[in-house]
Image (tube, rainbow, N blue to C red; front, side, top):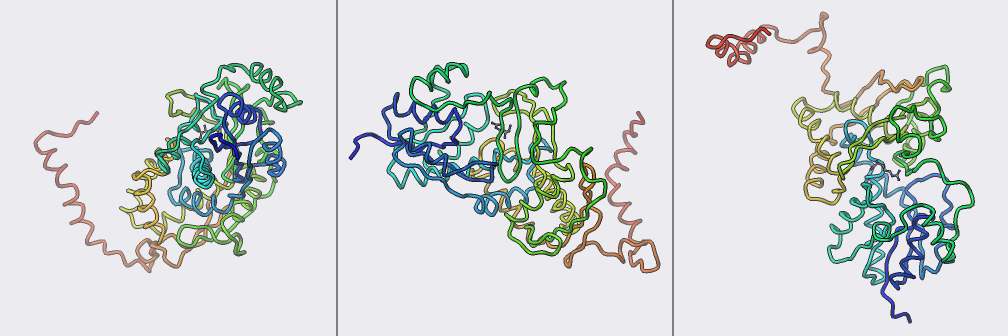
Length: 404
Ligand code: ARG
């Protein structure tokens, strides 16, 4: 029976977390429990990663399929809030970190571990998200961030350390970009993208066609929503996870969801980020459209403001904060009314809403129509205008409005 203290590590199988896994044993004299979560990232053989962790001396390793939980408990909330940071980025990295953190805290409790470790650098957002989430779930657990602490400044230093300590190093050339991906899309940064004047090279994109290479004929897709959650595609019922997979394929094929932006990181740095988020982009477009049909006006106005704040909280790592949870409660209340079908036309990089219907639509044909069916009471308009303009009219009588 080992006397050593235990640490739970978020392990991805890559060079950084592999060096961390060894470093925690060598430098901190800890027993490592490696955790690898499947949140829908591409081409990762989780059993292989698990074995790699054990081969490097981890006392336990676990690979967990978190996709359904990620879709049902995290991405439904992101969609309810139409979560877009800086009005653009669907938050894919910010959404997966709290789930991974929750899992790590659970494992730490199960194994009686004193520490949780991650392999994030000291310059990014993900360190903040992991640590804020962990502190929210268990303020007593101590967090270790070796990459922030060690003196392996360059990749060569890291490779040398790895070789000296028997950590398998990648034989292929260093990947030209830093990528994070899951069901909600891919984030691509670094390399030539660091110069904002450079157009993103085609090889950064892996789950979408370029609009130029997308099919020459449009494709129409109907998405059914029940209380804010997509439940069917083209009439075929499926769970949210399957909807996401299907929409990634369809929207990606039509070149939808490629984003390129300068983003404001938490730590104050602006960074150039590219994302490809076919399903997230298409589903948010469809969901936002249905809300315009099903939400009462003032609720919709207020929601638009709160969506911005929701995205801010989540980007800033505050998934488990009281404010974010209160905002979730507001969003959930509004979603009771968001039921219907949205028809999207996909064509050459665009996802355009071309039709929608709902049994609980607030669009009233007789009120909206200029035709014979019109039931709107025009005679009420004069009184409405007199009263709504009264404060301005009084003010103008005293001060006169500025013309320029
Ligand atoms: N900038 C994005 C965010 O903070 C994506 C970060 C992704 N990480 C990466 N290693 N590429 O949410």
